[in-house]
Image (cartoon, rainbow, N blue to C red):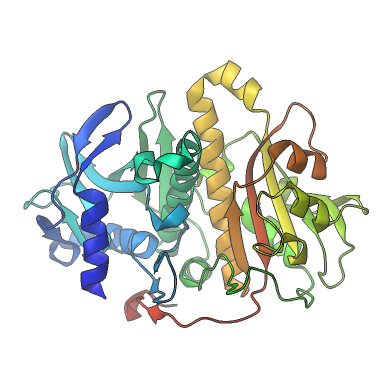
Length: 380
């Protein structure tokens, strides 16, 4: 198992990759220092990295076997995380649980740790074209939010920053008022994008009362420091078959669902999806959560960095909603494979708003076999 994961890591990291506009060769994966060998002052930052980034399970039957605390298209893992001190950097190798590239340990106090998140859209097949950039920045939002969740679980905060050149950093600091046990439970829950050996569809039963409110609160009352708090996003969801909740279209801004169209159905979301119903039965799912934003206005005000910020925030929302769904035994499938204008119409988005992200939520019809890769010490 470890040998297979290590081989995948080597195949995706032992090559020239991009960071912003400047090429940089990723350090050799086998060089470096084990997290267990770091000074004691780095114990909590190391634990935060482990909980957020390391593989959680391995599905031998799946085309994309490795699963972590956050999703990645085709399990390509498009975001690298490095510990940075001045001009020195150590790439975090989540498979081997080590900082790669240097044999020496960081010398900082361990009370403030800077992480550099570098994006690598080139790891996706060329056929993704411009969509690769979008998917990569969404994944970066998931990673930043996973770090925020993990930091909260350890009584720390993780604060992201994105500069105009596209350099994304996350600063880990001790301190934070939060329910660490609940944060750890959400982050270690069994995440899934849904299971469908003959096409993905959801369990036809009702979801428990309060499910949509619970998911909406997870999106808006999240870990401190998460990019999910960045302004500019609008949230709407088509919901059906939830105990005590009328089916229809809801606005979700602020964390409280508000019914705005009782005639809206998941069939409209299905029609906007680019895969046929025998592959993905969207209409059978309970929630179609659509994230939009006035992208043109944001770009006029802040340039391309503003668009990246919107994608980071949308990815972070997807992470928090996915964590809450997993803790409730639900799947959450993030998607971009839609006819955007049709989906915007399905949720009555104003003409100025553009689609950013779709979250499809329901309960799986079946359970799968997988190897559990969690270390006992990270379990709640």
